[in-house]
Image 1 (spheres, rainbow, N blue to C red):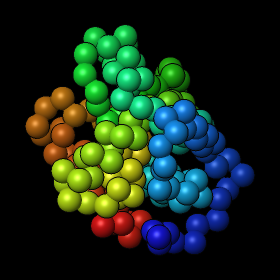
Image 2 (cartoon, one colour):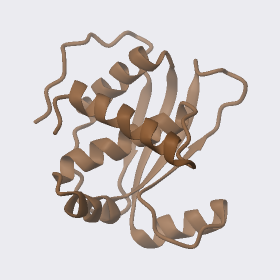
Image 3 (spheres, rainbow, N blue to C red):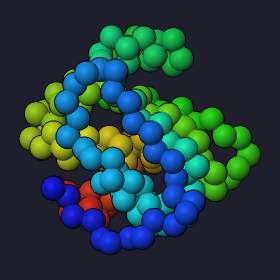
Length: 156
């Protein structure tokens, strides 16, 4: 189990909702994700007002990818940010995560399934916060931030 510092949640703790229409087993506890979200906000100087985390299967992630991004393939995560002109102080967004793809990636990377699920969650938060991974430089910067937050949470 991940170790998180004891951080009291302020009354305006971001709202995190999780749904799992994929039916796959998900190795993360909502309280752990909320703690990680709070650490992320403090260190990135952003505020999330609402984050919806939706675990889908390969068919649905491919449909979303094709319909909204014109990409006809399965991916691990697709993030959508909904707020406009709030800077980064009231971020609202949805993270569509492909549970089977994340599990496959953990095998490919030689990491635990749990750590890969955390990595993808952080990756999505970074996208919602304005990070991009279209170039190698940007992708490397995102990977460094992901590693930082996994280390903060005691996840290897």
